[in-house]
Amino acid sequence: MGLLTGVGFQNWLAAAANSASAFSSSAFPLKPLFLKPRSIFTSTPAALRRTLRLSSYSTSTAPPSTMGDAAADSAMDAVQRRLMFEDECILVDENDRVVGHDSKYNCHLMEKIESENLLHRAFSVFLFNSKYELLLQQRSATKVTFPLVWTNTCCSHPLYRDSELIEEKALGARNAAQRKLFDELGIPAEDVPVDQFTPLGRILYKAPSDGKWGEHELDYLLFIIRDVSVHPNPDEVVDVKYVNQQQLKELLRKADAGEEGIKLSPWFRLVVDNFLFKWWDHVEKGTLEEAADMKTIHKLT
Image 1 (tube, rainbow, N blue to C red):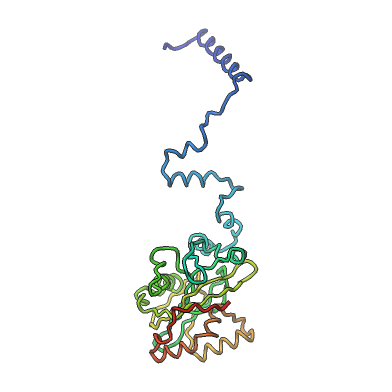
Image 2: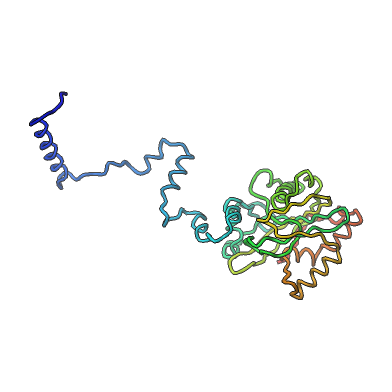
């Protein structure tokens, strides 16, 4: 086809304009040039499809997930917010059978705990040095639940991952404990070998933290006797100290009297009131295995 110039080109433009006018009439309504919206996903990889779907949400329309909640909690500490939405806790029934998984965020919302009876696995580490002193930590001010309270050495959750779902000899909880001792207190894995943890028992409890947050946990109680190097992570821990039995009893007295603003975590207090001092005696005697009872779930709610 040759090039159009001069009058020929002007005539071609006029004809094109008349054609466009004809197609815009009611007899020939124009239709969008886009194909079905879903057609873009039919030939793209799954990862790209997920990216495209997420990027299609406007700032005023959140996807059907906890992302909307993340925006609502924008004042939350960035590290804690990331953990709340990235970590997947293990949901269990009251007999410790796995029934699913959910975000750490959802597992700690009292509204969901109450309405859906969400119960998740947890662990509490009690680490003693060679002088049989117990290492305590004070939780950081940025923690979503129970900020600034004093508690046992380390308290967290096995996550919904293969290595932390292993139930034989509580290996999943022990693997998680080793991971979190490093995350929270900078204790290297070689200082706390997994096979050195002694699982002593399990408790089930529920405790509100404030009007929004709380705990509903099936908690594995893990004891270990090791001299370790401690380098607290300020995002998790504001202070640490070793105590002997008498020093812990004085701390309890101050907490009960409201002195010095000292508060204790509810799970730590439950363990102290029900088990800790008699188990501590076994620590000092070297007879800890005699105290173990992993068959019973002690319901302390």
